[in-house]
Image (cartoon, rainbow, N blue to C red; front, side, top):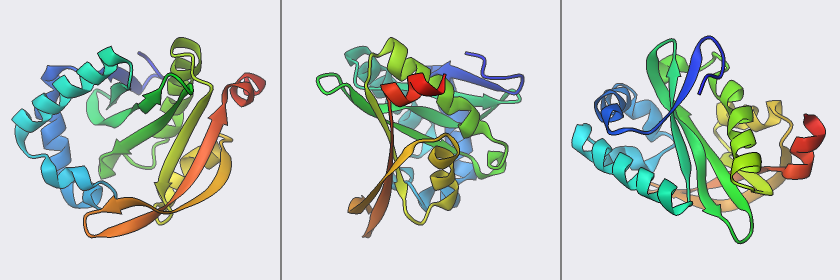
Length: 179
């Protein structure tokens, strides 16, 4: 799925396992700051198993996930996770290798992900949560006119402590007004 001349979203495929493993290895200390899963993932086999499980969750309708390709190189991942069809909601998650930050990649991808969430998946509410200390991640929903709803105190356990989380949302009616 073409986002612009530099960015493409590709559904997760098993052939992403090795480049994904290499990207995480190069960015392990950077990603570990925000994501506890980094410590559990090592080697292409772990990522291959992860991709199979992610695709199973997609088949079950509980997530939709993409690899972000920037200028032909695997840069990160984005998707809608924890999809709740009964309540018509899901949460956008994303990450990039440090070398890809500051290029507007995630900001460019999210409108397409929102379109998929609202138009294809029939969601009514899409959230973005991020650690209150993650200023780069916080800037993304603010740039895209998400509604800031507040702070979830100690909303995420991270390695050895709890992080407070900012929560932002976009409703279908907000999205339709912005079209």
